[in-house]
Image (cartoon, rainbow, N blue to C red):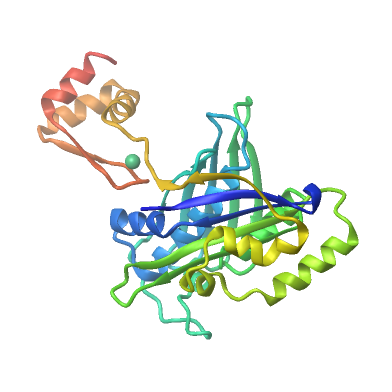
Length: 291
Ligand code: ZN
């Protein structure tokens, strides 16, 4: 899967921009979690946004988590991204089905409902940075735009889209994120606003075969677009047997003993990638010795 994102600047650094093609990421998530179309769209959009937001972080070990909790039937989403284009995530209720919205599109806003968007950045400080805003539409791109404006005081334009095939596999996914840096002139701001109004839906652009480079060129070409970096994006979970064992050890002696006494192989599932880790009674006994 040839997913990737680009990082760019324009107008001599007054604008910074990201664009991503993430069809493979959305499809991998769909396969891992067996998501319904509306859940695939919600998760695909949020993972695409998070991948680009993750690329804003500087540190090797930095980790971004974006959580949405809503009162809609999907109840919420959790996504994480690092600074290298590795993303993963899950929907709380992945099988939710909803009729299309008024525009005939997948009703992501209706699936999420009213709620809260939280951005947690673990950038190696004692306490992680946490920013929280309400959901404005639940359509995710607008919610992230609102988050950037209110929580980070950065005027931004976020577009995210996932288009499905008739057989419910992912046909296209991607997005862009454009931000005005402090000191951007009025001329640049107004010009960019106009330009963004003329841009067609991101899923249409992707379906026409437009690459992230072409999409940013369409928006920022006249502002001296400079592409600074290209990096792969992938659905990647770092869970492992060792990590699962550590978690089991951390539940404590009494809990472990209880599982052993039940005499059956237990199965630990990773929320993020839905991988199953069976742990036998003999293995549990081995872990108990390490508590
Ligand atoms: Zn995992």
